[in-house]
Length: 327
Ligand code: ASP
Image (cartoon, rainbow, N blue to C red; front, side):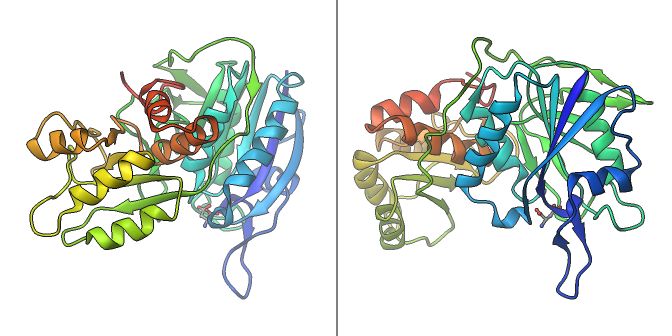
């Protein structure tokens, strides 16, 4: 059994500096501090790809990580990635779209407290990730605070608490029981030849709908990018009373994709439910369904990396690619 642990930085790799916590430890140093032997029954190899606070992660870094993973897929029985928690859900979603049919478990993890601090959650999270990685369930997952969640379904829901991630609109895949991990939901992920497709379009405007948002602001921001995600309220809809955002949205939606997600954490959008939602659909808005905000953004990047026309992008957005959307 061979496992690769790939380091990209984050709190899990951080130590105290005069200017706050900074990612600087290698994976070998993290394993040493976590008390994990590199040959405890399983042979562990390590590779440091990046060492960044994940606030600094850019879409191009997903391509770097994805390429390294793809190269390692044939050589390992499982892969663990240590990553900052702030953008971990974006990375796990983006990787899930770029890397198809991974034949082994790829498990992202991180920690809320640096491994160098007393009481850090890092050893526990790495152990959970490793225990799940050796189980052999193919797919891209996130291991955090005794849970395994599907990579396309997680969101960071707490900026300080250790239970910082939740699986949104989707069951947890597995949970820790004693020294083991018990699987309780196996996602119906597609299978086939593994492939890596790095084509993504990072140039997206992501805008939160707020009372009073002017059509001018929307147009200025929307015109500057290749696609728009609009984070609406509740089940979704566009205001047309007073400041008429609907007119501006309908103008942009003819030229480029405008996808609507929701500010609510759970439930997703259903634009057929209310009149304000029906108008959005008529204006050409593409509903994000029950996808997370992170999956919505990264899937739109992926879709725009593969299609030019709004209709083709709509088709990709509405299709289930990696259990990210219920159809
Ligand atoms: N700022 C850190 C990061 O995302 C937070 C963490 O890892 O928990 O890299």
